[in-house]
Image 1 (cartoon, rainbow over the protein chains, first blue to last red):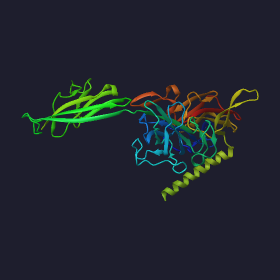
Image 2 (cartoon, each protein chain N blue to C red):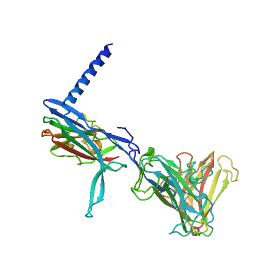
Image 3 (cartoon, rainbow over the protein chains, first blue to last red):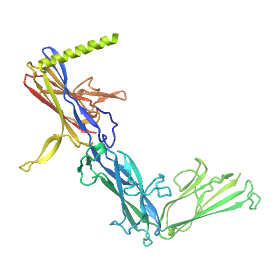
Image 4 (cartoon, rainbow over the protein chains, first blue to last red):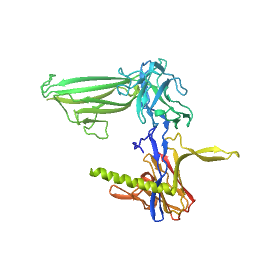
Amino acid sequence: MLAHPAWSAGTSAGTVIENVAQVNFDISGLNITLDSNVVSLTVAERVDVVVALQSPEILAASGEVDSGLLFTVSNTGNGSEAFSLEIDSVLAGDDFDPTPAVPAIYFDTDSSGDFSVGDVAYQAGVNDPVLAADASINILLVNDIPTTASNGQRGRSELNARSLTGSGSVGTIFNGQGDNGVDAVLGMTGGSGAATGVYLISDVQVQILKSVVVADPFGGAEPVPGAILNYAISIEVTNSGTAANAVVTDVVPTNTTYVSNSLQVNSSALTDAPDLDAGELNTSGVATLVVRLGDLTQSDGRQTVTFQVSID
Amino acid sequence: MKSMSKLAVFLFFTATSMAVFAQDGGYLEVNTVVQTEEAYTDEAGELRTRLVAAEKVVPGDEVIYTVTFKNVGDEPAENVVITNPISADLTYVAGSAFGASSSVQFSVDGGKNFAAAEDLTVSEDDAARLATPEDYTHVRWLFSNDLAPGAQGVVRFRARLK
């Protein structure tokens, strides 16, 4: 009997499980033990794959190029499998069809979670991912957003993964096609999987402007020790759409000290403590001011965050 | 030189005991098979199951081990016990051990100690808990009746591939 680690995907394909029964008995006062024949069972390969979307709904602008959706392809079978990948961006139930880039499928080679320069393109039949049992790989679908897509519209794009051993109905058998020549059987997923990502058009634009006014202790505007720097950060959202969960963060400059309780948003004071109000001075690490503005739209108008520091 | 002579003695005894079996033509024959259950529809259109050779077994599938034994000698066999290991890649299916006129016991320590399911415990974090089928390493059947010459018996259990 071979000892194997307990894969969550199950006992490895090709594992041989041998069994010998034993009989023990007494005859004429003699105690005897005998072994049975050896019966062996070879574990077949179960072919299963699961595709899962990793990106939440991605915000994109109309006309944007090379927007990536992140997926994970997992081999949930008990043997090594190669998978072919396909993209489908012409799906029902959405407002527009994203345009697959050429090429459109990439490995997330640099593990950044988004489409970047170092990512290697997938080529069917050339670099089909080979995954060990229980292994998974991150895949990016890259689409361009049509200029005709308008704010608030959604476009869907699907990644399909298919076992190269075969796919189809659950229980389909591929004789001798599994690891080391064992039989392969299609599991619950039928040897294929798919998941769909969504692009949500948001043409919203956010402008941030930061300014400073110096007040020295002598009534002038010289940046000398003891002078107060009055910072103002203005945030304005334009175009249609919502800037969700807008947060302003700003590091207290070196060689300056934050003036206690000087933080304000739209002329309303905020406490320095991390409490229920919208802002605080975060002192873990480099002193940083944090103000949460919530969901902003054009109708909210200009938001202004102010605070003071003194030159050391 | 000493070790060589010991080896010679050992070989001598082994050969002798084998000879005894050969002369008597054996006492009991024991045979084991592993099968799976297959659903089929009979001539009357009824859905039935039958046992077929265990091929194409994948994780999650159940297999059925059947051990048959027969007294091929001239004298009754007393205190017959059939013991079957449960591979680490398999999990015993609770309540599946079958054997007419036998009591069933399990081991969780590689066959050293056996007890009925309700009396078998495993120590975990310095506390004893009732053993579960996942803990079983062996199953055995104890027969209270003698096995007469020519008589045969059968035991069976199911296990699920991990």
